[in-house]
Image (cartoon, rainbow, N blue to C red):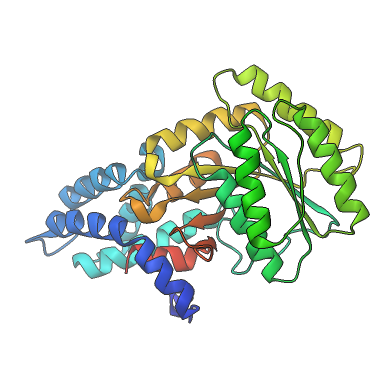
Length: 317
């Protein structure tokens, strides 16, 4: 398909290739064995491919969708060998991601016309939530946007301090209160400050506790309601940050958070340290929520806008 002929930004693509190296190597070593000695894609190859996709944390339901699509292609076109199968995989997975509008962008831009654009970030502790916020602030500032951060994860002093470090590093203002303060109060103050400063983007960090879903739901609902007193349609997006290296546990976190609040987009981090890159495909499909950002390294530039063509090209290169 022609979209794989696109010329990608070389530096970004090299980082993505490197970040997905473990996932790609793991996948292709298994795929090579699955087609060894085969002259055509038969039922045995498809059964093996199904096992490989599930083992790559694509997820059972999404894997079955992919296999069904490939079976249809094989039945009509009689594709042979690993190269043809590889190409079909790329095309069908890109098509699957298109159904959730995942990977449509290529630059860090505000997705809607709103000023300020308010992004509320959710996710459990340890997934890279605060780091993702810091890197987002850096990328948006680099694009010329005026960014304000809000430290509404007030249950951990470390979370507030970590966000302060990122604000200082990136050179953007932060609104914070003491540990134990009301998160909704921090969000309210952050939006008031952002409006006063004529900011373009507000990024609100929130607590990452899942031990009591009802409490989490009530807290996030309150934060939203209080923000709307300042900006009527805030938040414009709720970004769920997931650790890609946890595989199936990331699916469970997505399930819990989507039950607790309306998640509109996803960021999947730590893909460079794992062979579980397939989780990006599975989570996007299963929850019908677009993946917006991926983390493929520890550097400040290594948070990327998720582009499905670049991702699939790197994964199946």
